[in-house]
Amino acid sequence: MGASRVIGLPAEVKDRERRIALTPSAVASVVDRGHRVLVQTGAGEGAGFADNDYKEAGAELVASAADAWAAEVVVKVKEPQAGEYPHFRDDLTLFTYLHLAAEPELAAALVGAGVRAYAYETLTERGGLPLLAPMSEIAGRAAAIVGAEKLSAAQGGSGTLMGGAAGVPPAKAVVIGMGVAGTMAARGLRGLDAHVTGVDIDLQRLYDHHLDGTVDATQISEPAAVADHVCDADLVIGAALVPGARAPMVVTEAMVTSMRPGSVVVDLAIDQGGCIETARPTSLSEPTYVEHGVVHYCVTNVPGQFPRTASAALSAAVAPRLLRLLDDPDHPGLEGALNIAEGAVVHPAVAATFPDLPSRD
Ligand SMILES: NC(=O)c1ccc[n+]([C@@H]2O[C@H](COP(=O)([O-])OP(=O)(O)OC[C@H]3O[C@@H](n4cnc5c(N)ncnc54)[C@H](O)[C@@H]3O)[C@@H](O)[C@H]2O)c1
Image (cartoon, rainbow, N blue to C red; front, side, top):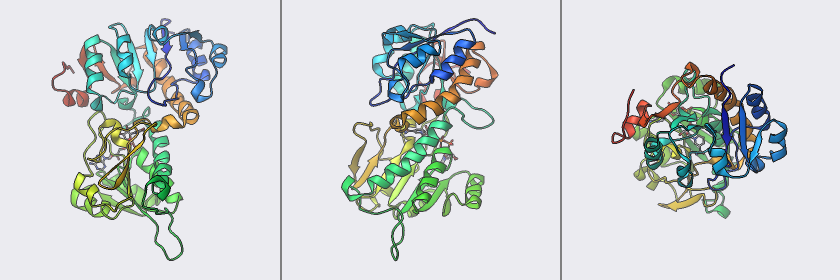
């Protein structure tokens, strides 16, 4: 067993964010390994976990965010918000989603304060992203529900029902990026009997989806072909990712302009800057806006509205990797996670995004 460490779980402060990164049972497994866990009072409430559940799991309840942030290692869900930057210090280790490609001020604040910052979304294992995948799964499923709902006339959409009716063809949906989020979105849309086209740059991935029937049609990601599908789509879901980098711009403003009024775009990739040119970040309080007659839903914390499922799924993925980090900050099982250390950007894709920030390999 490694040295005993102090871990802090502050309550999330992002708009309507109700997740927590560790459930009481995950906290119990960390405490069992000889560590102390400080949980801010009420931090688990939004996800259905009472203070007493954490106490019984062996956590110590602390009254303020500052008390939780005073721990050696802070474990969170969303990237720190501006009001949390004053908690940064050079002996702090942070383990959370960071999405720095879309957060230049956060990147500069972490570098400036000398925080050792690990990002969930870039931790790589066997070619996958195990700490991004659970939230992408939930966001993808949610995107299908939200997209279908926003197409209703009551929500400002064109009044098109996903599955159509006898003698009326189904709605057309296009999913950009058929990874974890895109696959779950496509499954949800197929479940509603929409016609779904999956777009990706990875031909093998499209081949697999083509064979297993996740989508009705597949399309390699080339601008002219994407434009042909988008102009005819009722719903476009953006879920393209290049890990650590700004999202690739796949759907241009001209393509959005070509869509029918009342059509809907949901850009999940907005947390990495967006893969739809007209997308800009929205919140759970004000999730949509209309541009070129098209309803845009670009919420950066979609799973935050399903905190019970999302916290349990995130915690299951975070807890074993947190134990590795507590044992050894350079543990080989944390490959790709370290974004910032000792006042420099150390993740190559993040460093390429911020050439003006100090960086090292
Ligand atoms: N908004 C939210 O609340 C929320 C929640 C969870 C995940 N996400 C985001 O959703 C995005 C997708 O995550 P994921 O886990 O599914 O990633 P993933 O790596 O599993 O899949 C991404 C896919 O995009 C494809 N891609 C890359 N470049 C492309 C291009 N130019 N055209 C078409 N496809 C391209 C890749 O080949 C891959 O199949 C990420 O930005 C992630 O952060 C957002």
